Image (cartoon, rainbow, N blue to C red):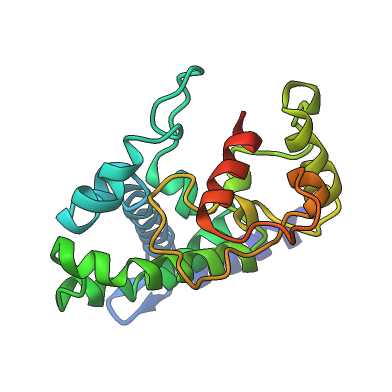
Amino acid sequence: MIGKCKAILLWVWRVLSTPAGTLSLGFLTLGGFVGGIIFWGAFNTALEVTNTEAFCVGCHEMKDNVYEEMTRTVHFSNRSGVRASCPDCHVPHQWTNKIARKMQASKEVWGKIFGTINTREKFLDHRLELAQHEWARLKANDSLECRNCHSSIAMDFTKQTKRAAEIHTRYLLTGKATCIDCHKGIAHELPNMEGVDPGWKVPAELMGKAGTHGLQDTDQLAAFLEGVEG
């Protein structure tokens, strides 16, 4: 039995020590393992660097437009002292979803290269288009980034206004609506919404206006959001 074990160990050693070109198979295996660790570490480090607010506002297109707007919202400064950064709202936390989002966002590099929104005027011209792309993305993934911080399970409806608690119970918990349906413009200024369907309509009875059909314009939308956030 002992002799058989020795024979197996000797065979393994011969395989690992057999030259492969100029290097042994064992050395190549070890080198590949170490190289894999270095590559994985470098990849994740680079991924996290691109997942910081400092990276996001590194170009003036973001810093002078959407970031400057966000500094005037409740997501930037509030009574609880909890601040949401760019990746909190625009990058999922789960690794696979994060990678998919990074791949999707990589095409935005072309916009930087060709100066698509390199001036305030160009940004304002494209604001509606940019907003609609983001609204559609959040609608499609059930407001996944919003849920990085906001969990319907953790909501204490007794601390919400009566209207907000009822709407969340009837529509958010049942899956009939998702965060972005009601909370457009919560972190950045809304584009010109004239002629644009704001999305999900609030039933007339919840608006307290009999005979209406929900939110008809941006003024009603703003009033509704104020009630929800209160």
